[in-house]
Each structure stands twice: as structure tokens, then as C-alpha cells.
Length: 232
Ligand SMILES: [Fe+2]
Image (cartoon, rainbow, N blue to C red; front, side, top):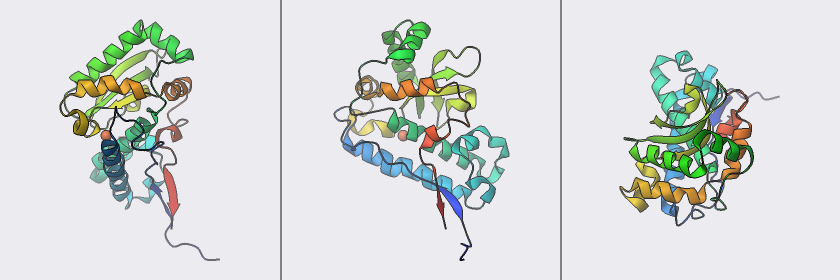
């Protein structure tokens, strides 16, 4: 039997779960195509390149890579963290939206938002304000604290940092890097944030909320879809 000489796993760019034009008019098709096919694709490519010389890291999950920066070789630590974060965050971002999105959350998530923010409108206002005021490139999140009762909070992270590294489980995310909105909205990030509520997939957010009591390792595949492909 032939045994492949070289066998290792590569992280994969997930397919967009809908057509690039499906979120118009709120997010235009050209932005979606560039964002997914160029920006997200480059994070996956850069991550695979950085891991090429480190077989012991190639089959680690994305979550493990993000949660264990101290175990990464210093030569590739920043590259791995930045690009694994870009891959995880964008994979979640595509699924946070849907052509059938908008409306309001239901069930346990709706109850938790009302309990922790007072109302859905108050939560949205806080999320929009955090996203609009955030300086530079980053992300705005609805996240659940992993300790002390699991309160919901609005957070921002810089670059491609993920709330998991700060002890928060991400429930919903919006990308506030300029590449997410500049072609259509130019410098008007606030307009992009307000329109985005029309495409939010509350069912996905609700599913994430209901699994948010699991450990990061248990939910790892929820972060990047089919993240690894064995190649020879
Ligand atoms: Fe992005």
C-alpha cells in the first residue's frame, strides 16, 4: 500500500452561505465578493503558510491557536494569532447574516437581552455606539461572559482579536474594518451599522447563545466550519 510521504491539514476558506448579492441593498455584492474572496481568503492563506514549518501545530483547532499564544513559536506567533483570528471572526461574521435576516430575537436570547440591557432597542443603541466610536480596524460583539453568571455585554476588539481570549463567548458580531463598508458607505460607518440590523440572522445568534455554556474546545467547529482538510 502506498503511504503518502507528506500528509498535513490545511485550514479552508468556508463558502459564503448565500449569494454575494443576497444582502443588498444593505451590503453590496462587490464588497461581499472582495471581503470574502480576497480579505478572508488571504487570512486563511497566510495562516497555512505560517504553519507550514510546524507540523505539531497544523492539526490544532483555530480556537486552540487563539487561546494558546504562549505555546506558539515566537517567529510566527503574531502572524498565526492575527490570521487565525481573521479566519475565525470572518467565518462567524458570514453566518451572523442572512438574506432572510432582520426582525427580532426570540426565545432565551430575547429574554437575556431584555434582562441585561433593558430592551432590544437599548442593546442595539449600545452596539451601534460602540461600533461607530471604535477607533481604527476591529470588531463589535454581543458576547456572554464565561464566568459569574454569563451576563451579556457589548464589546469591541482591535485587529482580529476574539472575545474568547478575554473570557467571553461571542454571540453576534459585526465587522467594522473599512473593507466591510467603504465602497458603499465611504466614511459613514454609522449608516452601515444601522442598515446591518436588516440582515442580522437572529436564529444563528440564538443558537450560539444556547451553546454558550460549552467550553471553547467543545464549540471550536462552530467558529470556522470545516476548518481543516487533510492533504497529501
Ligand atoms: Fe473583514
